[in-house]
Length: 107
Image (cartoon, rainbow, N blue to C red; front, side, top):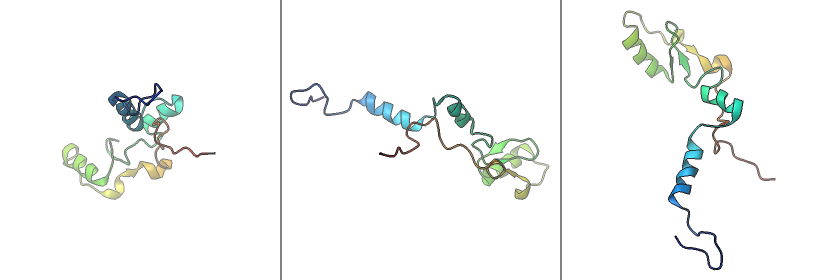
């Protein structure tokens, strides 16, 4: 690491500080009660579709089709019978607990 001339500040970031910045931007943690609600995905949950038989959630219809084939082989798969949780509850949460999720306005 190189030091700036005449000061104690480093010119380069350490590997640990860069890893911490990446972790803070990507991990969903903190945020108090709003953060806990965010990690759970709010009322809708993070997965979009819900199986009408067992209430298992899946992120998309392709995954829901695979779920039906493996867990309910005797039932016929109908896309319209799957409950769209995001439409029902007004989408999922927006990432309150992720530090780098919201751009902060400069005033």
